[in-house]
Image (tube, rainbow, N blue to C red; front, side, top):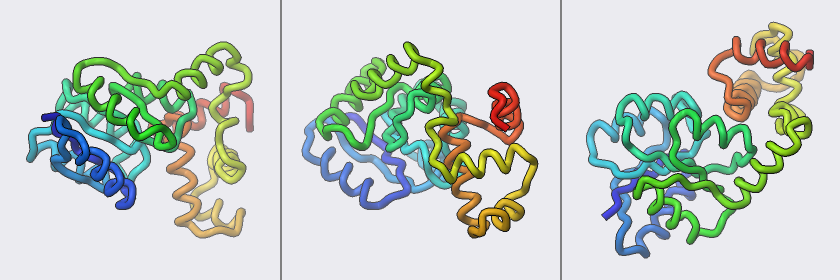
Length: 209
């Protein structure tokens, strides 16, 4: 049996995935986690064969969580299961240590195939995501990471690049601190930034300030 740990901060997603996996004879859900801390804790307590991981959860999350899992269990296959299908996010996740990347918008049967493949030592990338990655590679000028951000995320990116704090951005955009922090987290994950220094470096290199 393939023992899977489901890591997603949305209960409805976890329940849906559990129902799907319960229909199989070779895959079993060994645990659930709704944040990065729980993922790391359960990996120390349980024998897990595959981590089905949402890349955007309460911290630690994203590339940081992938690195932490890799340090804890270097051989453990991680299958990213996400709504964020931008090619640069996929590439960053795979480079950091994920074994596969599966879209939440895909056919449920493909998720089962993906789990089996990464468990068997293979890599898996959703076909539509792979096509997007191929197009991004062929036309890099059309695929700059910051062009994939939402309008509000780009606004927050620009203000952060100007050295403004979360509180200052909140005042500037007339939105709550929590909303600014959420946008910041999302754009950092989408862009593959580990810290604000990466953000400054990116905007400088691309001349977008």
